[in-house]
Image 1 (cartoon, rainbow, N blue to C red):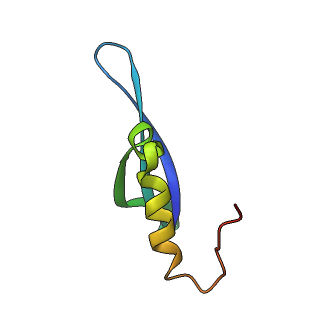
Image 2: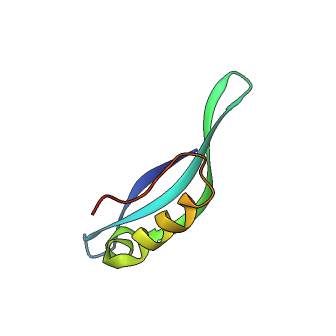
Length: 69
């Protein structure tokens, strides 16, 4: 699984970037992608909620993800 930024164009021509968690898999010899979760708009996530989400997910990791301040 990995994170992907998806860019969508609005009717007025402006762009919005959404963050998705995506799973890659193979289906009958073809590589496919399945969206597991939509996390929301990147501009809103960068306002602080993305850091909270990463810290929350780091609790379940076997690696040490302590922040260096």
